[in-house]
Image 1 (cartoon, rainbow, N blue to C red):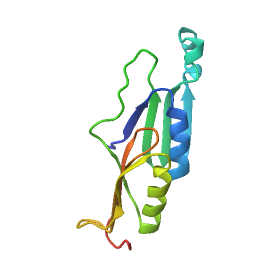
Image 2: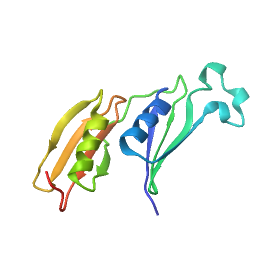
Image 3: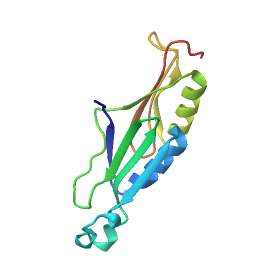
Image 4: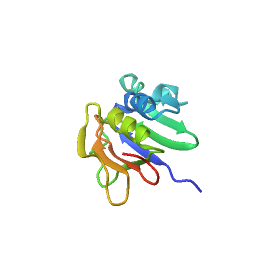
Length: 138
């Protein structure tokens, strides 16, 4: 069994996932509603929205889609996407990349459980935790 996160956006999914592939790495697939087999039922102005996006980094998947206009979207509440960095160089790179245009709730710093830990919200409103434990150097 695998557990993967699925993010919902309001018209920014493809842009967000292009940002994530730059920040995190991996392979990206994005399918717009225009590629849906029943696309004729979707208003032309909504066909560019994302039906499904998948970022695959070494078998770890981050997926998402856009809502359709009229569907309520209130952002992500009560959840963070957590990244376990291999070392502090990677933790620092992730922290800086994901923080561009976003807001930091906790700077990357040593904690009692980790060599480095940070919390931030990216420019798309997605909350992230970056953790580096073990032999990481800060």
